[in-house]
Image (tube, rainbow, N blue to C red; front, side):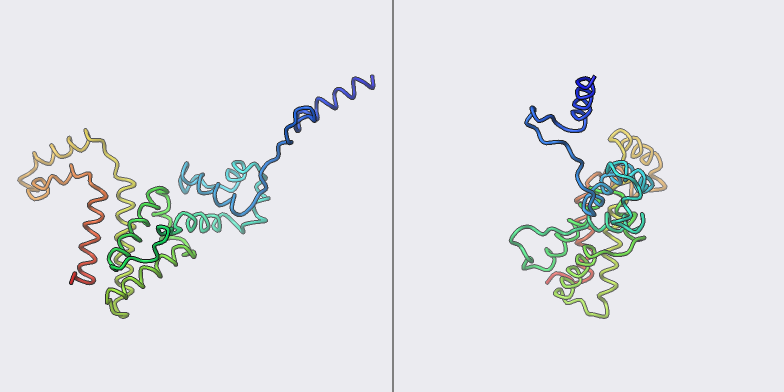
Length: 232
């Protein structure tokens, strides 16, 4: 009977970790940390959107109890703030601190900002409703320095910053939500052609067939920058 108990114990032990004969280390779950919580929250938001982020669901993904999360974050609102700021970190090209041309500074900064939000579409709609974290504040500081370098007066700086902010957020939300197939675009343009007497200009420009989102963003940004500080 003692041998049977010993065998059962050995069997149970094998389920909890590797046996000494296997030469493998026992399995263990990664420890819970703020970094893991934020990274997993970003994954959950990418998969299920803002409404899908629940503390219990996040805990399940982390393989922990929901109450364990509160050792690291105060509440779900804090998780939103941290996840949002994490995806908006600005990583400039290695070895490049700034371009010689202030326009290139701004274009690179804002194109990267838009690309970051398109990789995480929930971030564009969440950003105006959340506290601004260190990463987005760092972006705004870089933007304000580039505008000052362009000659934008301090009295106009805030208006310039918010104009560019509104452009980037609006362009990102539109791109993230305006998904039509080529067939849908063609059908919409055909209907517009039938109404050309009412809408002759946008029918002539083939507005509904235009799918060059990146090109439209860059050209629109040039329009704004020309207005803020015309090319010399």
